Length: 166
Ligand code: SF4
Image 1 (cartoon, rainbow, N blue to C red):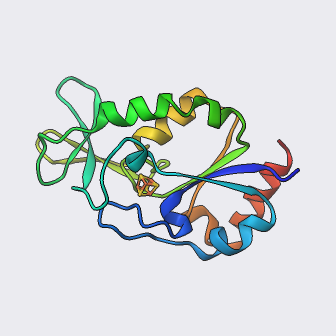
Image 2: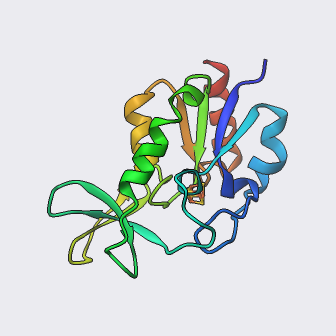
């Protein structure tokens, strides 16, 4: 049986991004289905956010918690909605072998997402999105990567080899 791989839906050409666009990645869309069963997911639309919607970014709050807050309007806070949706995905994640995340996203970024403080100063550029962080903590056995790591052939081959070892 082919391994099962969750994929950020915008990488598969689904128009679920905040601006109503998608960011399809050719290898993931066209080649990966030869080697894996694809399970699209989108934490933000899964959490009930609209398309299009206001952009959010990660902010370390004065409460020391990581928030996903509106870029234009910091009063918009979708952190709890994202955590609540993530908790509903435990069953789905248990049957996956790996996940491909969209880089730099406040929900999906895997060590590539900018983190700001309450004063909008950039603290880090290598943070995890809210959903990716939850997956790393809750399902440490999954093979994880992002779209950037799959641009080059050696990254594609490494990811497929890691899946085969599962
Ligand atoms: S990066 Fe993640 S949350 Fe954002 S549109 Fe893509 S799948 Fe949805």
